[in-house]
Image 1 (cartoon, rainbow, N blue to C red):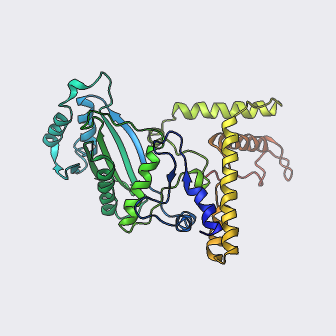
Image 2: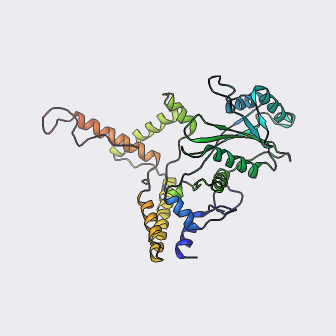
Image 3: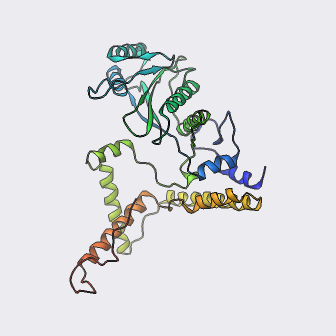
Length: 348
């Protein structure tokens, strides 16, 4: 193994907090790839799979409502979607959904009050990905991960540009144990889903955000939906208020509160980027100039070390500066107006 391979292996082998299986290898399990193959895929921005736990159902009415949603039986304006279960059987219409609900709730007498009966998961890929291959990969992933002990159904949705499948797992297993999703499990599911996609010829990776140099967490789906409806979430208002207070405190010369978690983020990201650059240099020394250039450019294109709080504060400062420039006399005309140098920044 070359020095570059050893360095890259440090990025793709990690011990996630809360994971049950200790160190996890991001290079895949069945068809193990070399570290440089994974690095090349990440650096060339191969599509990243998304696996997100979207919620749970509690009780028969809630379960029925959810199944009608993923099958589109609750929306007369959209065509119905066929559900497929763990046995490969197709489930049609409201009668089929009612039968499935009754089957899954048959052991309701063994459930506790307020118990989560199912876990809802969405698995998706970016627009342009072959939808049938995505569905087939979900079918294989679900069988591999859950079929030994849990019942489930899934449905492919075609109403959005990105290919995505809704998977619902019954939490009560054949052995009487409930499905427990621990921290680290969703990342393991991403890796298994990506592996199934690659086996079907779909370019896919499942690397953690930190390995790609991404600091900010993705926005929660509930928040995204509220924004689409023109509603400002309470969390958004609170974050903006906090950013305004922080900027005001700094202007007054007050010391900002300690945020040790941000220091840890910066420390980890500095290490990640140095590791990528070290691998690039080692690749160049070994004669693989193409990989070296690809890795170096990848680091150069990484987003800034900026949390959501930092971004909001920067926006607040920008708005204050633009407001001051608007109210100040123009140097060229003596009239109030925005200085040409005070253009709005692109916050994308």
